[in-house]
Length: 126
Image (cartoon, rainbow, N blue to C red; front, top):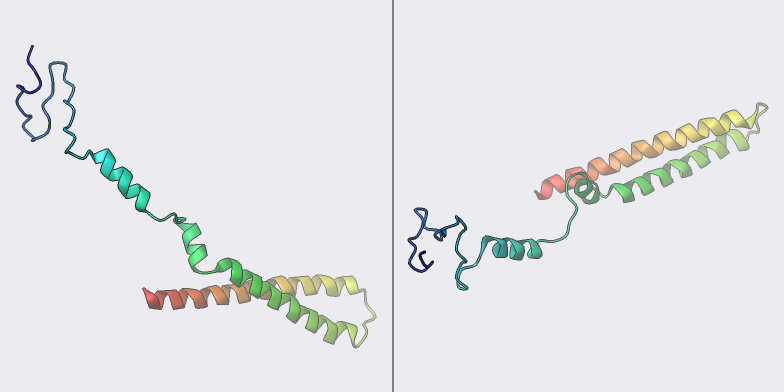
């Protein structure tokens, strides 16, 4: 049997394999690839990726809040001005259903406009 110190180095410059085919231990001076990768992974910031990062960057949550608040406030003003003040003879249930449709539709439209505005501003910085 030969000692690992007497074994020749492998052709690729790595550690020589022993008699059983296992690579010899690296010297303490040499950093292993696992050590380098572990250090690199520890320094990466914790951020969401993919769609979550885009939603966060475009402030979708805040824009949706603002858009739907605007939609409901505008709908309350329209409902008051056209239904409550003149006094209607028909069932108010129909007007409430129409008010809901107006509020959600307008809220979605305003939200989309705000998100597009933020996307445009973000594209200017890239």
